[in-house]
Length: 304
Image 1 (tube, rainbow, N blue to C red):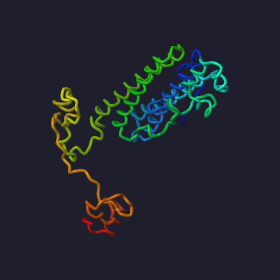
Image 2 (tube, rainbow, N blue to C red):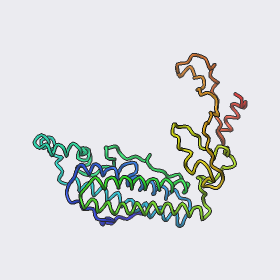
Image 3 (cartoon, rainbow, N blue to C red):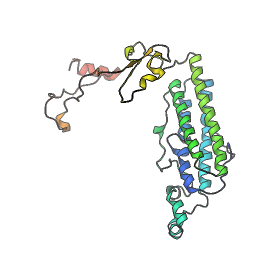
Image 4 (cartoon, rainbow, N blue to C red):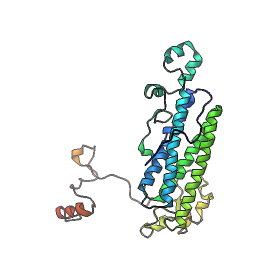
């Protein structure tokens, strides 16, 4: 259950309208690392968390706070658009070059789509989409993604700080910067506790280490023209997970065969010269369960 109060988490009071800055601020609302992204990312992680207790409670506390941040940014955008010359924009632009310059940097979709208010979109008007969010169910992987999201959000907030001289806008951004700082620290601390509690290790997921080709789990391949990749601590010494020793391979060679796709099905009409022979007959893949049983019954010969 969610409940809404009419009072915002922090004051949102710009000194004056600024439609150009309102467009820039849309990035913090509906951009890839905006408030809508972290809100839905944390909510989905919380709802997907399989454990009761401190981790789920932390996720849901921050997620619910982020809903309030969406409201704050949306309200700030709306107030920055208040009084902006949008309804008679063409006439105003023709009559006043200053107005024309302002309108040239504003977002007309804020007027056309949402009546002079915010949109769930980024600073270029691209709609927000759920593809931005991460919710894997593995808390270690998710918390690392959360640190990244908060770091990117704080970077963008810091950049926007330098793009305005409005004291009211800066006041809100001061608060947002502080909360981004806290949230990064919270997720980093939660990562530490996952390890201390024995729930996860350093690498996510903490499994299949005996199945992976461990000889390839410690060597950095030198595959660029740069000359200094062996100067970092990742070129030698123990790995952070304590399982390996870093090594540096200065002249790596391919381990696979020459790249080529299989012969194409002639009914798909891919251009083909016959050099790779004829395509294999249609057959099932490597399915398990019921599909695998059907495969075995229909095609008992694994060689095709």
